[in-house]
Amino acid sequence: MYKRILAANWKMNLGINDSLVLAKKIAKDIKVSKDKQYILCPSFHSIYSIKNKISKIKLYLGAQDCSQFSNGAYTGDISATMLTKLGCKYVILGHSERRIYLNENNEILKKKLYLAHKASLKVIFCVGEKIEDYKINKSKEKIEKQLSDVFSKNISKENLIIAYEPVWAIGTNKTPNLDEINGMHKFIKELIKKRYRINNIRVLYGGSVNSSNSRKIFSLSNVDGGLIGGASLNASEFIKIYDSLN
Ligand code: PGA
Image (tube, rainbow, N blue to C red):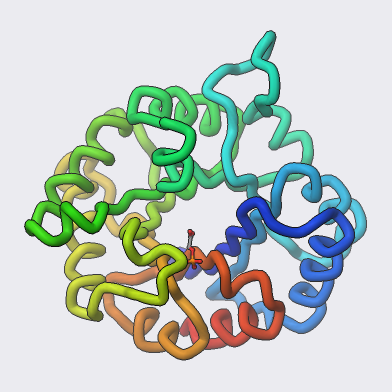
């Protein structure tokens, strides 16, 4: 049985000290249990100090992106191998903010996924429809394309986690209803099973999760955890969300 997962996406927030303070608070107060784990994804500049200063506690770190190139003259990029060496075990790929503001397309994501796996990083791969697709009932079609354009036949269940994050639910305090969330997660799992012969891939829900709605979302049969943005910037709120993951 795989562990359920709660991942914190701190996005481009917090300096090194504030990141360290937040990570320490979470690591100190969270009740780690054997059937669930949490992953912190700070911005690049804070990963090193968190890794070094909180090394005694079992803390999983992830990055929010990696380069589509393995190394060389790519100013500003950070490679998957560099992240592994920094102490990351995970990387978030395909977040809608990168798709929208940084023009990441499926072709680029395919290269990133390949390099991340080659560097032994586990990937939290984000998919999600925009509001205009949701309104005309095209969510499943969009998500199917986001998955099938990027995954190859030899993807492995161990290294891959999917996060369903409707674009219109991110940072908006809006979420799909519970049936819609469960239905989409079921759809993703069935698609992955049919196409790649992988049973029970973990699918996290992300988009306006907080301590008031998390328990209901996490109780859905096809939801294996969450990817938390805004609410993960507050230690006690993040811990409450973690506690609601059963
Ligand atoms: P949110 O962001 O929790 O602030 O809606 C989630 C995400 O972007 O991963």
